[in-house]
Image: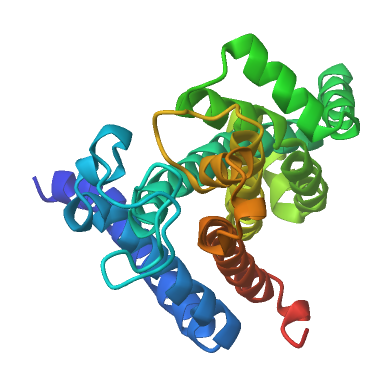
Length: 307
């Protein structure tokens, strides 16, 4: 019985040690991140918009953004009742911005997750396999990089049936992974030359074991840092596609609000509150993710610490 307890306790002990090391690494990383003022400022901006998106149904009930239930004057300037004015339908701009944050952040994060999964998988596989498979994945990555994003996204959105948030997420996710794949492939080639990979191959480990147990943990910090930068690009892409009329017309987003503002003559009418706030929200969220990504990149790569 004692031997059984010892046998069963060994894996549990290893798992406990692994969890302790992960907690220690996270605590050390958070301690380093807190010393980056730009990163903390970006995190504060992101938390503000995240809370606004989560509390939008509480602060602004759904009827406040309904065209048929709008109570304000058309294109009314900011006032005590409507702090940021109203749109061409009499809806509160502040409510539209809060509800638009839900769509923009959801699309940005979900599309980035798709992009990161595809890019990381293709990057690790193309760097690990040195035969026909690796070369084919590398050529596929180069092909996606060469094609301009906007025409490809418009074609995919049209083929998949534009007008839904899910379509926008898929379109952005499957068109923005190539840069991540090139970056991860370069890091994979560096990891592949390390001695412990040679020992793992000599002990008979398979390709899947090498890629998931040795390569992926070493490239994951780079994936994490690149993710925050890719979210900013995804949000800009969502804004662009919604501005072109490919977004969901039934769900307000910052890009859709800008599209409606330009379509309804907000510029000629001088309704700056209809154009400025959505654009400023896009700039602030993109800036916040960029600042967080740069701070994480400095932590992952100490050589950039002084830049």
